[in-house]
Length: 262
Ligand SMILES: Nc1ncnc2c1ncn2[C@@H]1O[C@H](COP(=O)(O)OP(=O)(O)OP(=O)(O)O)[C@@H](O)[C@H]1O
Image 1 (cartoon, rainbow, N blue to C red):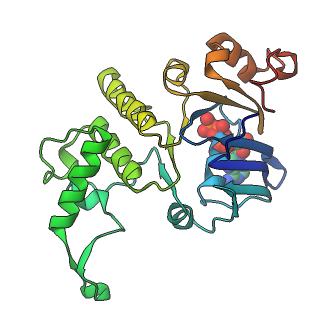
Image 2: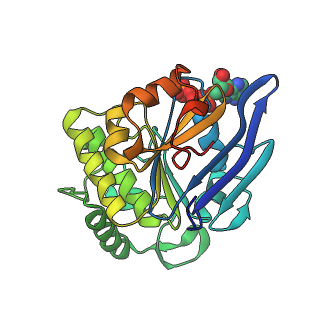
């Protein structure tokens, strides 16, 4: 075990829907600056886990600890306010708005705060958007273009830059390249590597093992509603992870006790 305090520590998180045990006693940790992947077969409980740690749903039991503090998220907004930024597959972007308006969607900067009559500070939002995009390594030709004209990859990049710009604690990416082509996937992966260099902790849900092995420090394996173990990427290989996902390998038989956190 490491002595570093985890950014996120989850203990015995459980969510049952009637008789369906979507997630039982899931324990997980993310260290400062660490990039981790969540993998598992369909129905293994990955999405349920993410919904619980992003405030979309509340657990039946278990503890979520953020930077050493026990927290409860009553809504996604609550989780966001407490420092967890999530990029969902649906991206939550507004097609008809330009890049700055999308980056500041729901967090607009105002010159005069008068409730519904507030005056937006477009200049500040434009400047800060440009800075967020450049810090994240995202290149957008024309920031005043609406998102409607952009490719899936460009939109994904805007969503990740927004998350990186506002994340106080960590970023969660849900299948960020599932709908992208090869070149766009490579671009998004470059951006994720940039976040690693900046020390921003990150959790990625991905079915793409090549991508997982290329990007993360640690892999958490979900199986039948449980987190069965985690493996340091450098101490495992794709065959072993597939074996853990399918049940062909029993985590109890793995030798490296340091690398297994069950
Ligand atoms: N709202 C719900 N009501 C009832 N059962 C649910 C609900 N959400 C999830 N489940 C069930 O919980 C189990 C875990 O589902 P979950 O979506 O978390 O898996 P997953 O690993 O994300 O799968 P996938 O990769 O297909 O998205 C499945 O059996 C699913 O049918």
